[in-house]
Amino acid sequence: MKPGALVALAGLLGACAASATPAVTPPARPVAAAFPDDPRPLPRYHSTRFALSLPLPDGHTWRIDDHSRETLVATHAPTRSRVVAATFRVEALVGRAQCEALAHARNLVPSGELRVLEDETGITQQTFDTRTVVAIEPGLGPSQPLVGHVMAFGGFLRKCFVFDYSTEVDGAADEPVLSTRLAYARARILGGLELDPFGTVSRAPPAPQASPPSPSPPP
Image 1 (cartoon, rainbow, N blue to C red):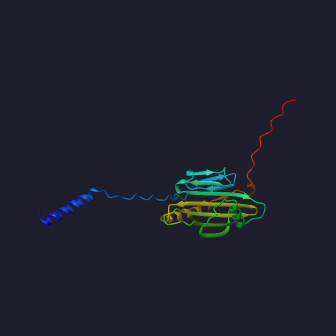
Image 2 (tube, rainbow, N blue to C red):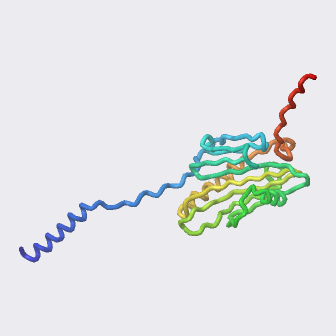
Image 3 (tube, rainbow, N blue to C red):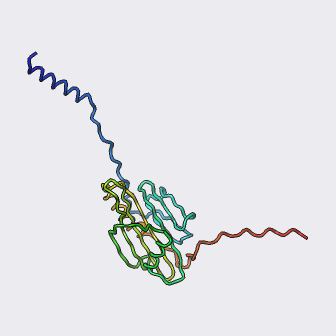
């Protein structure tokens, strides 16, 4: 066989071997979930204990705990989101700074290092002196999970409200989705939070009622 034919045969065999080996396709990276883009009014959960009404997108998929903790806690597994909300009365006149300090002292919101993206103060819920913060927990690297927060602390006379929306994505590649969720929570969840009239919030959770005493046996 001529040398040129050997070269051609070797090339043909190499091509066949390459075609016989299937190409390995890396698994598709899961797309981070976002909230539905629906302009209609959101479903609402009303907490009698905290005298507040909380709007929640994709309402039926949230799990709500309104009895076992110091705060209302709602979790949304598809977006790895969590809402913490509470109201409480205090003995002294308060504003946003005092209510924020009380929230941290009671461990109602995270106290770790945050990278603040937005920090605003103003009047919300008609009468409350409020600080609103949008922030991100610094990640350890581009492939580490990122957690974002929308927090609010409001005070009016002797009443405080506390709000913390947190959500997690897999890493820096999902920052656009994280930003979208934070903007949504800022505008529609916190923006739609409603507080009941002032007098409906007690200073402390009601104590469990004691059982009535057993009747004494007849003499």
